[in-house]
Length: 381
Image (tube, rainbow, N blue to C red):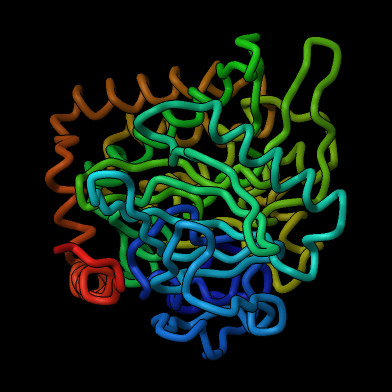
């Protein structure tokens, strides 16, 4: 089994419907890890319908377009436990703000473990305040719905960019996106709990789907739904959660995890964006996991001859199967890539990243922005 060009990949192991969610465009944590086949379903009255997960049709039901003080505008995505909506709220002084609401699905709302996991995700994400992490600003429960309020990012996921362009991304753009994401991961790896005590959060689901790239040229890590907190006396034990083709070997073996697990996954993200090719992809789960643990990892220069050797070396270092041989931290990897780019004369300008987002999704972003501007029933007079 070899790495496979993106245009010919099988999609059994990846979230189906991701490209449809990308079409909705305004994003915040809206590419979830386990989409199924999409279907158009009736939204609440007055709410714009987007292509959404068929399970959401069975589990998402609101009697009106309002959830507490939030007005639902468009459905952005659906996952195994939740739906994401573009929403609007008005505060004192008639200040209107757009946000993203991540709402726990009705059919798991009464399950104590699902509620605990959802609230834990909110607590973890809210505690990580960094420019390269999508911020959770509030949690609420209204009208029988439990939800997280997230900062809205005007942009698309790296996965959506990859699928839309279906080609290797420019080297400088790729490195700029990855370096941003690494700084976001570092903020999680070196975060603090609500009492101000240091803690280590392992994301466990680093993939192009969970890297949001904004029109402002900034990339942000999102979706801490399966993140694990490590303590001094306990390492997170690997479980089969996440996207198999972005697993680190220790995840595939269900071994102990640490921040270097996320570094390996980011190595896969970087390799694929640079080459326009998938790295680990089998015909079934077992074949994919075998590839993650055993498949020889090609030098990306075999597919991208103009990739500087120094950059390729750092990517391959992140992909070392022995965690001890990887970069010592997410920041160390970011600094190594920054140094390699500088030494090779590669620009990391955010403007180039923003231009790429415009190429991939500019029309869709403007369409949804117009929808958000014209759909409100709030008086602005």
